[in-house]
Image 1 (cartoon, rainbow, N blue to C red):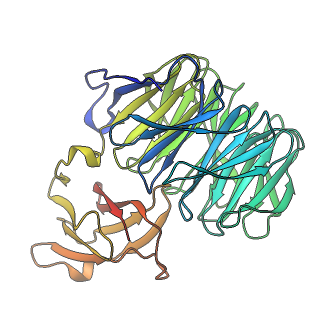
Image 2 (cartoon, rainbow, N blue to C red; image 1 turned 60 degrees about the vertical axis):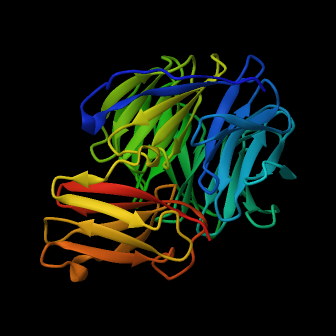
Length: 418
């Protein structure tokens, strides 16, 4: 596949705390019409489904180079990633199935029947299940992440077309019908609530730092914000025309919204739920995904046959290797990558610093307490062995270590490779 990568140099669009700019454009060729994106945290790759050629492009996350094309069924659409088994799932709406791809080899390892028009996917990390919404039947099929077998079917209402997972409460959210979401319990696969949102909900994402669910309303030109614990609406954010996709940046606590009608992206602050920036991209963007290793947002441009790459400078990506130092606050990790243990060296000027570790999806996996280890100079070294709060070994991949001290914070990405 011919690839032309154009690097677009631009000045900062805002102050350092809210700076996003176009970093690169990946051209896929006229035959490839990009529809959906997902990030593989184990191999640092981005997968892009192409409507026009019935395949998935594989992009190296470090170089932005296309390295492979994986054949799929007819009209590949939505993608999701299973980090535990290192698999990528792709809905094929034309052939009514799901293609399962090995994340390391880029080879198809299974094809599953998924109804008449599968439109959405999400991964339940607690129970290692994949949920697939069938637009035609109104059902959500539950797939075992290890065996690739359908183990349950949930009735989700009319025309379900978007899914996302809330790991803090083990719930799955499904956009269904003209203006509502169905909430599914992740353990029992039972519907437990219905939430009214805006007109034509079409995309969802979860903010684990504040436990919020964001819902893009295609015909409402807005994003509805839902509290993840109570499943109640807490805010509405005005976006551009026809918001069609959402992605959460776990490094800087931002939600990015692709506006299909305006060919731009709205950046939303995750704490205040306010729009902070609009970034021009290619024509008619229908999908987004976040790369935490380089702190990049990838935007699929349906009518430009390209992918726009947005850099967010609030936290420097691994590629820059800049020292992560704030005013009287610093954080480093060695060795990085690591297999058994990494040492976190930190310094803070407050009395109650906090160190938390998040996975590539932004879910909190470990909460460390450095206070007892602080020296009189307010510095210390902590060890992390790649386990969660319950002592369970975590899968290979990129993790975010965040040091917070009052209103100051710094972050470091670490790579676990056993």
